[in-house]
Amino acid sequence: MSSLSQVKYSTPDHLSRFVGEQVPRDARLMAARGMLPLPPADLLHTLFVLSRDPDQEIANTASQSLVRMPENILKTILGDKQTHPLILDFAARNLDSASPLHDVIALNPGAHDDTIVFQASLLRKELVDIISQNQTRILRRPDIVDVLAENMMMGQAQLERILKFLELEEKRAAKKAPVKPAVEVDIEELEEEEEEVSAVTEPGEDEEVAAVTDAASAWSRMTFDQDLLTDHKTETEEEEEDLETNLYKKIGSMPVSKKIKLALMGGAQARSILIKDSNKMVSASVLKSPRITESEIEGISRSKAVSDELIRMISGNREWTKSYQVKLNLVQNPKCPLSESMRLMNHLRDKDLRDLARSRNIPSQVAAQAKRLLARKEEKSKPGAKR
Image: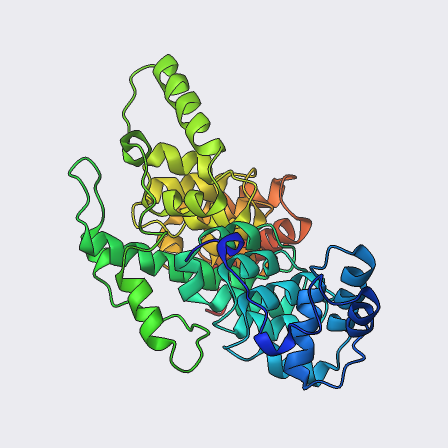
C-alpha cells in the first residue's frame, strides 16, 4: 500500500461549480458554511475540497462544517467502503478524539493504514480495542503496534491479544523458513496446535486476511543480525561486557514492533536486555519466546527490577510454577500478587516458611501466613493431634 501522501483525489465533475479558484469567493464561503441544497455525500465532498482551499477562512469554515454534520449522516458516509481514503483520513484527524465515529473509520477496510496509525495514538479505549484486533493491518503495518504500545488506553486484554497473534505469526514463519543450525528452537513447541485469535474483519475481507498472512508481510520481512539470534558463550567478564554493549546499541534504536519479534526469536543475551525494556509489550514478549529456559524463568521470578505484570504472568503459568525454586522466588518477591503468594506458600518446605516468617522484605500478610502455616504444621505434629 502506497503512503497516504501519494493518494490522489479528484473533485467530482458535478461539484466543480461550487469549488475551485474560478468560483467567486462569496460563493465558496457560502458553500463552506454548508448552505448548499446538496445530498449529504455531495455536501461532504464539497466541504472536503473547500477544506483545502488556499483561502484560510474558507478552509477553516469548511473543516468545521464537515465535522459538525449530523452524526447519523457522517456515520453512514464514513462507514462506506467507497468513501475516499483522504476523506476518511481528514475526518479522523479533525473529529474530537472521543467521537464514536472514530470506531466507524477504523472498521472501514477502505481507510488507509496511515489513518489507522494516527488513530492508534488516540485515547479512546473502544478504538484501541478495534485496532488491536485487526490482524490484516498489523501484519501490513507493524508501526501500528509501535503506536499502540505507547497508548495509555492499551489494557491487558488488548496487549495479550496482539502478543498472541504475533507469537502465532512468528511460529508460522518459523515453519516456512527453517532456522539456521546456530539458532536452536524447540520444534515441538512450534508444532503445537495453534489457537485462533479473533480478528476484526468486514464482509469480503477474509480473502485479504489470508493473502496478507500467506504473503511476505512487513512483520515476516523483519530480519536481525546473527549475533542477536545466537546464545553466546563468553569466557571473561570483559567479553560479556563488550557483547552486552554491542547488543544494547543494536536493540536500543529498534521500534517496539521489531523488539517484540526479537523477543520471540532472539538469543539469551537479547532476551536479557529486552526483559528490562520499559515497554510492557516488549518485556512480556520475552516470556512468549519458545526458546526461553527454566533458568531464565527462575532469574526473572527472583528479580525485583522487572515489572509486576511479568511476575503475574509467571505466577499464573502452571508449567513454570512446577519448579520449586520458581515457587519460592515468587513468594519472596514483593511484586507477586498476594493471592498467588498465598497459594504457592502451601507447597513450600518448613525451612523456607521459617525464613519467610522472619523476613522484612516481603509483604506483612505473606510473613503472617508463613507463621500460620508453621503453627498448623506444629499442631498437627503433636502426639494425639487429629490428622
